[in-house]
Length: 272
Ligand SMILES: [Zn+2]
View 1 (cartoon, protein in one colour):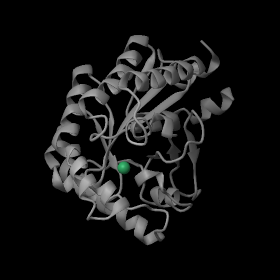
View 2 (cartoon, protein in one colour):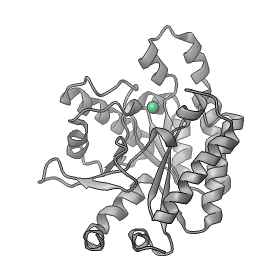
View 3 (spheres, protein in one colour):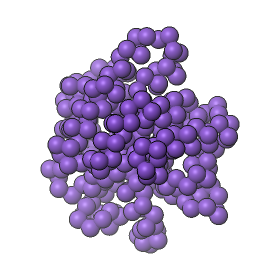
């Protein structure tokens, strides 16, 4: 075991975050307009069947994941948010209606995050602590606004294989950046092209094996209307089962990884 293993809780040498972006139909409505009834129809699967299947898959394995909710989906299906909470998952912010943040003003971004924050609190009674921007279309101000809202983590920038800490305003609490990747995103395999679930699982398991050797972190992004479909759900299941079988991969919610990273920041800097 190399020295980086000390970066994770005792007994673990790498970490895996499973984040589930519940876009509902709003992702494709934002991207293509409200009259794109093909995608409205396809993404109707998201709340109707995909999210329940993924909740079942996670429950069968006793895994806690991070749900990134579009605020309008919280309004549409508060029962799914309640079930995720009951099952021990984290509820975090994935914008109000999946509009991209890149062209937004500071006030627009702040209002968009706050509205979704409030919708989650109204259902769960708990404050979300993290944010993922729709389609990772953030801008240079997004992280500062997340910090101003008191969020602990965000997952927008593929800036490495470990978290890092940022403090846009030195007088406020820091924010932990958790790195996603299009290579750990089910869109890449099942929407942008067609890869078999077995081959996709092979990609992801190879990634995890390398990151485990190096003592690092894999932040997976899946969508219920994609990975919640029957075949693709096996790719996610195979990755989780592989992580469980390895025995020393910490499968954790984004919030838990971020708080662990902050709590051990001084010790980690000593290691480096
Ligand atoms: Zn999304």
